[in-house]
Image (cartoon, rainbow, N blue to C red; front, side, top):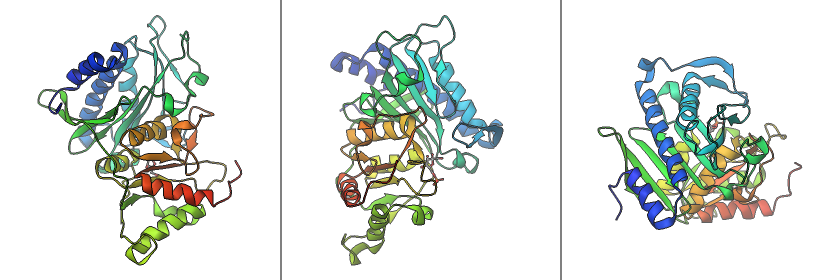
Length: 339
Ligand code: P6P
């Protein structure tokens, strides 16, 4: 019934009907403005002079792409003078970002992956921006890293942009999941879906199968049974997709069901996973749960996990409830790995 309204109208409605705070509505509006700017740079491709690598390595140990840095700066600029956020953190910045001196500190902490799927940038494949909004602890005006270390269940808002054929914005405020498409002619995000839903059953899985030999047995068992299809214990055939960008794979799960997995693997037993909790796992987990799905590490709900560090990595298994619960059962039969 709300299809066709703009993001601004949607946010006004949420303020009127659901007490959405004006400042949180403003944070979302500022993020939408940043996404429009990033979408423009992304759309230029090789003509924009922002393809290729910088000569920097980020804290993740990954080569920073020029567009990673560009997108990161755009998001900082769109929020640092709004008076709505108190500080920010990003995959591309080693430590938290404090606002310029003199700028009003707001009530929210913004964490984001400015450009998820960076290895897809130079080959014109799916990339996106993932963001999460946390409450700034009351009375804190100069946040420290520890103020960001909140469980994902604390998120006030989570969402992502996907820069594909269309630029879309998917969002949750804790009352379901809505999706907008950018109308470039007028520069407005238009509501196109007002309740994304993940079916309990799934038949499509996303995982990087080249890591097979490093997976823990519960994951090997689950994927083996998917491969067996109707001849195996699942009694149904599965399809596989892997986009190399969490934002794209998770959007497919939110749009047509299935499951996304980036489990803990034994390539580096000291690493609990590849994906980062604060700005990849937590926002996607909230969206998945709000769409009727489940988001788990394999052993517990992602949203209940207290992060230990800003760039904490965790295993991610999210999507169709029946699929994720089956994997959790397999983990229950598998001894806990030493931390
Ligand atoms: P792999 C992108 O670098 C990312 O962080 C996620 O967006 C994506 O799902 C994953 O890594 C891809 O990892 O090991 O398949 O290259």
